[in-house]
Length: 264
Image 1 (cartoon, rainbow, N blue to C red):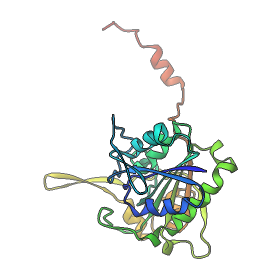
Image 2 (image 1 turned 180 degrees about the horizontal axis):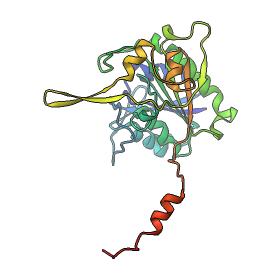
Image 3 (image 1 turned 60 degrees about the horizontal axis):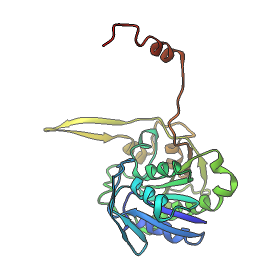
Image 4 (image 1 turned 30 degrees about the vertical axis):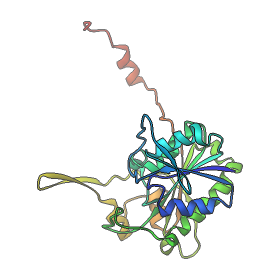
């Protein structure tokens, strides 16, 4: 198996290195990752990027989407699978799907018709500053275990005949389900807790869900990605990348009336 490994935390991140080491036991791993932290850039794409060799593979002066285009476009075009992660911090809920650089790398891969897995680590904390916090290698243990399980089995089992990519979120080991580490197939939560407040001359954005998750008291229903992680299970959401269309009579009727009035 040939795997392209990327992320959005940067090529020097612990989460990427532990996955590179683990996936090397399953096949050939080519790392093509941002030279610097590119968190929350979504699918931003550059016109051109500088690529330099690194002891892990290739460091790209660009975004996660840039890395996938570089990798699948020229550096390693014949890989079987793209893995993006492991991100320090969870990527949970519908509203983060287009915002996350980790997930966006997986989405970019699907347009090359290459299956992908995005992997993130949930670290509980009410006021945790991910720019200051550095997760230890041991905290990635369950995320690594889940990723290797999926990488080893997903291609041959037909998983990607139904899904374009998987969004995986794993708890830190101390928050895993004590009875037995388990994996739940989930859907992205539709609960949205973003808010904005005036502070002096600025408007500050806050996502209230993190505090609720830290308390273990969240409004998410069973079956959602966020609920599974808070309960100490690995969440796996099977997703498709292209935007769906739903044709309906109301829009058809509106389109048909275009041009009925006076021309511009």
